[in-house]
Image 1 (cartoon, rainbow, N blue to C red):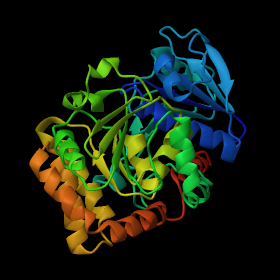
Image 2 (spheres, rainbow, N blue to C red):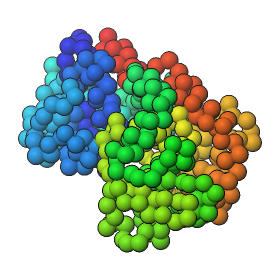
Image 3 (spheres, rainbow, N blue to C red):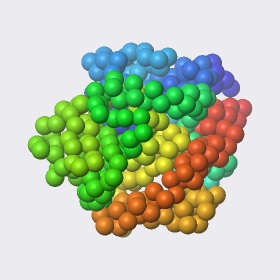
Length: 388
């Protein structure tokens, strides 16, 4: 049987929500290439969106190699030939091209076929992780389920990330230099800084009203996009017309427009803020690794199933928190996700009295959540075991 280290891995990703799916697969591809010296071929259907988080990418090229990863344009039909490797990963249930599936099934040694699923803290993840699904032609597809438990597929985290974060946060000059490099003005060392990357929600107006009346400066850092649609009443012009570096002041609140940044830059932004409001899977996990308190604005689903996912995560996150702090943080997240402007104001005020213990918990959580192994490590182990 072919060793997973003697042949390449193919990862297919369809860009669905601009930076979520591609954000995860790009981080995973880089980590597998750098830390495990694996030959990774990443197939992406929307290189223009990908280029927003990887500015060195040339969207006009069918194939290029960046940071040790071969990146192929996923066209229909493919204009770069697919050659089966040791592993074939379809990210987040994207539908593989029929020629790829046919070639994989007919290969003398078919690749190990995996479906990398979305991250969830729900209990069912453990029971589904690693289950096979027969695909015909004598080949199975296995469900690989990221998660927070030892029985799941784990969480994406680079080997040196926490050391880099700690070094960054140890010197306040780093965050001030970052803000300056992003064209943001008027932020002092002890000012409260909140980063915002959310969907539209009425809760934001409630928070901005509260922050405007604050006794100390609050800086809200937000990129152009869906969050700004909920801040239109705080802008002197259309959200579509604002430009990076602009600052709009309302009492104690300053709204700063962020430029687009790559993943490393976004990590540093999360490390530099006092509080982060994030959406999606990639930003959600990076906010946890930042060691800062956060709100997770989860993508709304039918019959409010997103709240089930939120509750599942909050149970894990609050396991070691004092009940009064846990209740306060949960209420804040629920109010934000239910667009309750008045309630989110009240819960924000309540949580400020727990700022120190909540920050201490946010710093400890990444260590507890990651346990001993990360997703890439568990994935490599899963492949080795499966190809024996």
